[in-house]
Amino acid sequence: MNPNDEIKEFLFDYIKKSETRFSEMLSKKQYHDIIADLLENCRSMVNSAENTAESTGILATGILHYILTQAQIPSQRKAEINGIKLDIIIPDAKTLLYNPQDALLICIPLSTNQNEINQILENYSTIQPIRQNIWTILEYDHDIQKTYTTHKNPTLPGIINDMIRFTNLHCKNKLKILGV
Image (tube, rainbow, N blue to C red; front, side):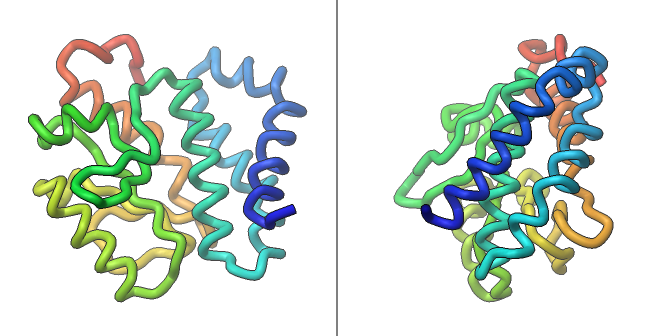
């Protein structure tokens, strides 16, 4: 089995085993705690992988797909615009293209190479001209405007509350039901 598939399988097996506990946490909107739990309990799969940057990206992507669905935050995943592959768009590509101030791009590079990351972000900025609306998820903190990390004092758990705040501010009244 492909190592990346193993990470996805491990993550979703862990989510299934934690379903009762997570359901209770979801009812209390404890999204931050769920992300922290998932990172803590699934990171061992990443640490044992050959390419930890790629494995980190796979894990972070899986966690975000799960939590975005559970928090009912509209998002579009694995989109392509103008030949540029995008990881996650909130709320969708149409909003990004016509009202970029109301859209977030979440970038999950599968590399630690600063030049590659910079190139990806440069490509993203051709589609999302508002740089503060491009958020990046990496293993460790880099000198990039809005970065969430997965290792050593991870900040990724805070992304969900920031996403909810953003959608409540920018996505008109469509998402006011989320509350945080």
